Image 1: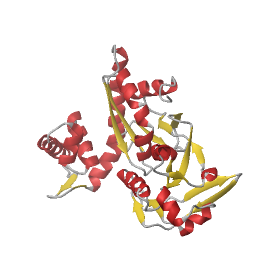
Image 2: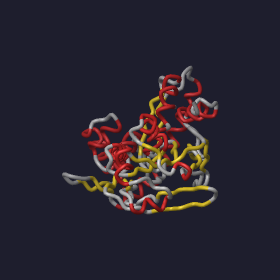
Image 3: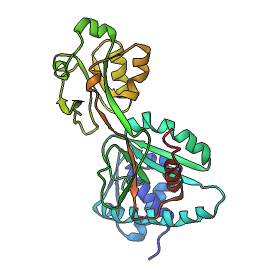
Image 4: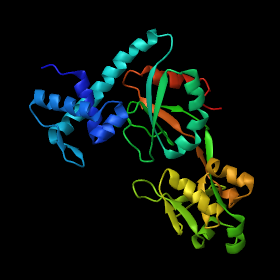
Length: 302
């Protein structure tokens, strides 16, 4: 039995987006065209793949099984077709990256503008989220994360600054009113502005000095999620609400302007910079190969 490749791609797009309108926005196709493609596929297979309601689209058991087998196969088809890019004068195509919010905010702005200028026919799509995901199952070509613990057959390439630090700071007004912490444990009686992962977990505040590591779960009046929540925490710190603990790069403009003052700077913990990782067991798409070459040449570290 032969099936149209476009219908199969339409099913995968709708299944991933969990909706026809959402899939249409992501795939530059109309929702009605996607609906008709899925209807044709279901008719050919003789089985329902999606349960549709006015509010949601949910995979049936048959749909779940088909998606699990089909998505990797379609990626291999895309990669195989992408081989012809090597015969073009200019590399073209789409590069999909899954990255933490901090990388999207602090690392990629120094890399992507120059990369896109060097490869004007490449389109980059960035999915920013802080949970660790299967980048291939999410439809991405590569991911960026802050450690080198990778699944089997994954290859890691350093990207961006190789050392970074967490910084702790508060406004001059807050420190005048509440006093300046002299030791990390002093933070347990201060108003600390906390972040929370999408999973609901609270990251501990970690400090290190002369080999001593201290991990704290301090109290505070404000909890923010990923994304724009970090900017809210910084604004609250500048306004004198409490103490903030974030990437130094995030706080550096406010430290340099004097809006925030460093707190416990001898205890600021440094850590390894991020890695770009991708599957080594599959053909590398031309846009990803170009991005890897760009990074390995040192163009991603400026």
